[in-house]
Length: 228
Image (cartoon, rainbow, N blue to C red; front, side, top):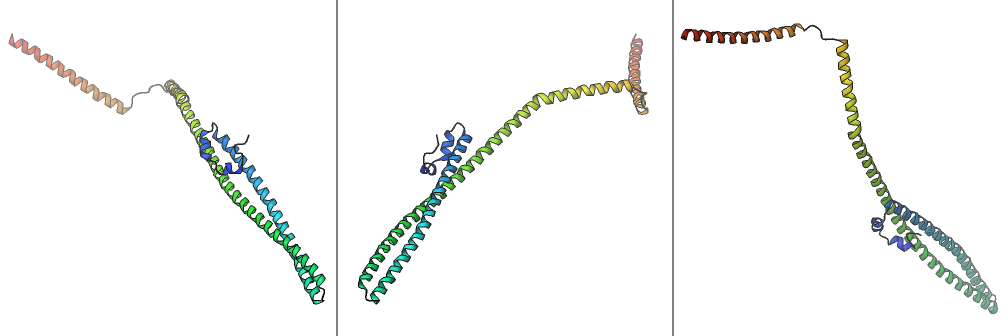
């Protein structure tokens, strides 16, 4: 069953409102465009037939007009020859063809008006179809953007929750392994000269502090003996 039932339904339709109510807007707009395209083809086909009929009628009218001129000339010739009887017959034929020309002209006018209406309808439908196609492109882009964003978010979540932890664990294990291998291959060597001097400075400070403690203890002992 079509979405639209006739041309005016399409032209007067509010596509945006229809899409808002649709469960599947993309499917709906595709159906709309398909029906619009079919209707447009029918309109153009009908218009083409009317144009063809108009051209055919135009040629017929020109032929009738030629006959009108011919019988007019014959009536004049009959008068010149004194044949009033033939002149009357010629004028009757002229009138008959003149009436046919008038009918053809009226029919041509009706056909031209119909052609103009077809062209107006076609232009309106093409504008409506252009708008529908733009709506479709917009929906498709929004759908692609939403899917891309969703995939990206899912990828980020998956990466954060799985890949990152796994890679960190592997890296940490690898570092531990490399350090262990380095210790086995390159055991600790003799301290450098700078390290030895640094150690001497540290030893001097310790010795100095120890001497101060001893001196303090010694002084305390002497004082106690003197007082006694």
